[in-house]
Image (cartoon, rainbow, N blue to C red; front, side):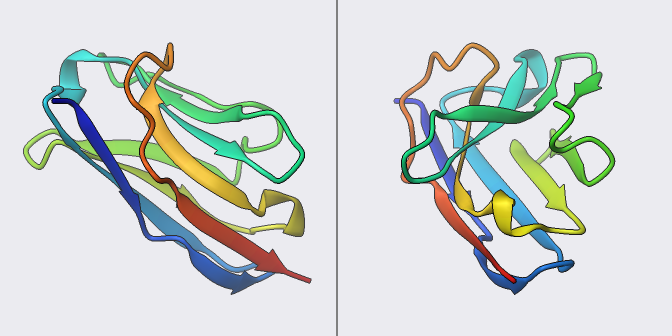
Length: 114
C-alpha cells in the first residue's frame, strides 16, 4: 500500500532551477530516512540527496551546493530543490527510502539543455 509519486520535472536550460515533489502514502516520511535518486539512460541509478528522520541531510559531490532535500511532515511530502542545473543532471528522478526498500514510482523526467 506504500505509494510514492514524483512530480515537478520538466525541460530547463542549463543554469536553471526545478523543484521536485514526492507525495507519500502508506509510509510516514518523518520517521524514515528518505532519499532522491536519479537514473539516466545507460547509467546506474544513483542517489543525489538523503534526509534522515532527524532532519540531517547528505549529498554526493555531484549535487552538493546545488541541490537541497527537505520534507513537509504535515503534508507527508518530500522535495528536492535543484539549482544551477547542468546537462549531466538530465535523468529520471525517483524518491524512496535511503535503502530503496519501497516500490519504485514512475519517476519524473528532468531534462537540462545546453
